[in-house]
Amino acid sequence: RVSDGAAADKPFAFQPGVGLITGWSEGVLKMKEGERSWLGVPSEKGYGAQSMGSPGGSGFYIPANSDLLFDIEILGKEEDVRQDL
Image (cartoon, rainbow, N blue to C red; front, top):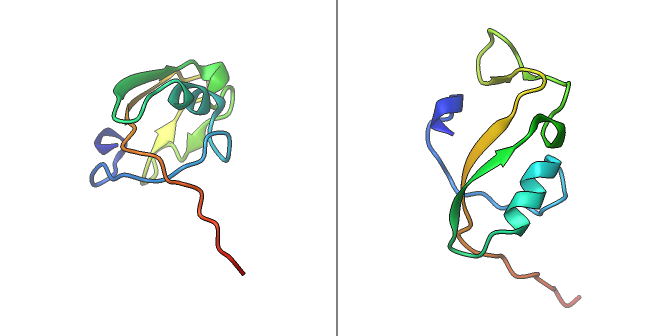
């Protein structure tokens, strides 16, 4: 993330298939807990013909039809939390 303007890499929680690009969801589901990998996502499984961000603006910009490359480490899995009401 440092290369996209973020201050530093920080762990975050996510649910595959919810609010993520298809290639990310497919890739992380193949990984095991504790595994670190480079995840290549072709444009058709990323943002496709749609650009993301603001060219020339602050933050990030991903041009349309861009292949993406992520450095991912699966630190763990959060267990489903059930609350008794």
